[in-house]
Length: 476
Image (cartoon, rainbow, N blue to C red; front, side, top):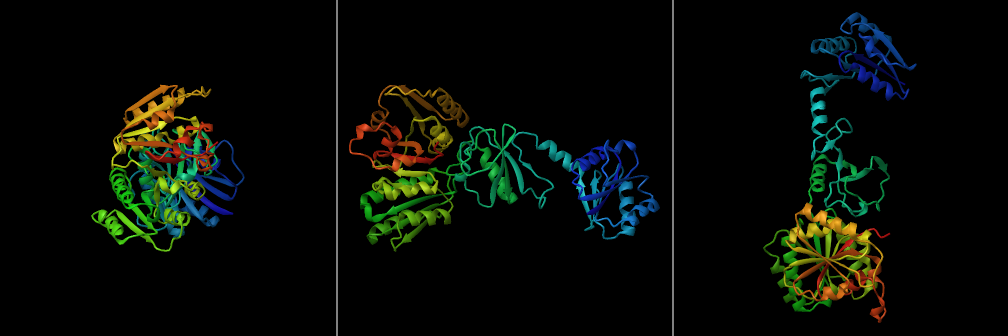
């Protein structure tokens, strides 16, 4: 049981006394010195003792100090001179007693036993933090440097519709979430939504970076998955011309996307000539790292190790790597976007395409669609086609895409028809990137009778013509 001395007077005394009473856990005993009866609480707990006198009186204050051994003093007074006088009187009897004071006047004391709370700064910070686009930081917790922050997820943020387990959290962590003024339990499968308020903890400098990233509505990908993009190149299954086209396509993506680095992982190298071509292609770019694997460790092991080591936000694979669906299924465990390189590569993307299927999946990937389009400077074409007369109404989802397009200031074209969406996709002639959710069913073995399959996501995944960006989701 600790003994606390509280000395109160002035405009904040009553409120401060009320907060002390409200937070009373009965683990402390309080001696309260006051001058105005208005300070007294309506209900007085047994662990509070009240003394009414002027605390600047050295003899009277000394009587309370000598009566018990106090572990700390809390002082809030109405005058700078009174405050300095009280500090002097306390230290005359208890030199090493910790004192916390509320300062409105700019008191300058270099004393390790006096902890000064700047009242004007606290008020100013509290008012400023109510303004929009201002980070809210915990002022008096931990190191008191702002290592705890409250952040609201804005509509259109690249963090919206991301599940927490897919968000790279290095030197920071999400530890709380409020939705509709209710505290929600944190779990990796929880999806962040616009207007959610998250509580994050970490290094203050990192938290400011995260705050800025969450608040921006475009140009953040591959964040929040990670900072770098990663090319896995198995030379044994690629011909020389194919490798050359892949390198040029990846150079284009590295130039367009807002990644920090490009990691090129080469496994099962074939000829010295093609190796030199790859190295020379990136020799003038300091943001590119080339890593060699001479031991044939296998795609699953290399991807798992490298994504952890290099802060990867997107993995680039050629469509040849998906020929064996069982082996390629390991990409699901990465919980990262997969850029699948198609057959038609010309180091440019003129259009992004979305074939809407189920509402849950496409709502989750919607912010990434426009983030990518803004960086690649493409127009997005959205196909809402229903050749078999599905019952699911996608009106709200289309409205959602239109609202996001306005936030990102991106142009979209919505095509509503009852035609076959896959046939329409195949007829695209310009360099196209299809963006679709990454689903476990895509890696199931298909029967030879393809006409039995009606899920456009699975059929599109089997196509080799265009580039595809597969975004990890939480499947219901």
